[in-house]
Length: 261
Image (cartoon, rainbow, N blue to C red; front, side, top):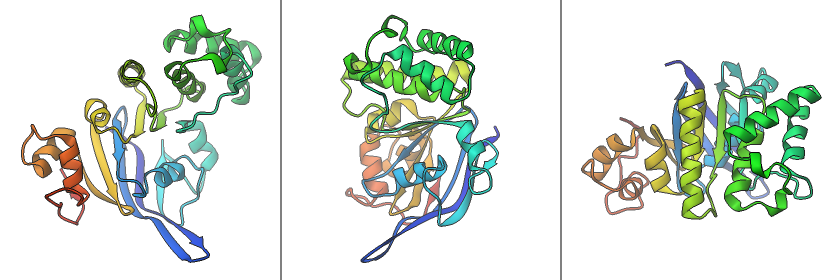
């Protein structure tokens, strides 16, 4: 399949009063069309910085990347048109209704009023929000609010959906519902999903392939089962033990060189 996201040597150094901090030291990454990619790593590994660079929210200080065929540096506006982004904290206005939020989002993407209304109805139907359209967003549950966040990110029919820890704080039922939604986006609409999460069971259940980063570089990549076999000792190993081994935080540290499986 064609690569929807491609990065080579992607890096970001922050200048602080104590000197430069290399948050991302050179990420090489390929995400294929229609793939759910789990992007994992310990706190401070560079996950969110990488995601923010790929969505044009942060300029790289090194390397290059393309999203949906558009270069981050040369055409950031085209990258933004091609991707949807759901941040950890969300971004809804608590004082307006679900309908108003979605119509406003459509208008911000320059849909005509009638088109924004039609797109709102489509998104509400597909994401199970129809009965909530006239409810204030402040009155939504955590799972309902997360579905609204995703609906807003899908307003312009992006090729790539970036989800930054989308199930943090959700109850088990809401997490399971969101997992089903992510799978449906991939299976029914062909959406490529770039997912960061600290829940290893979530990554194991959802991701077609995993990329594990540590200290600003790729430490390992492959399918969950292949990584378990290579780093956990057997295909029945837990992803947690595999993750700890790869990042050198478990009883068996991984080879420090990046390993592709």
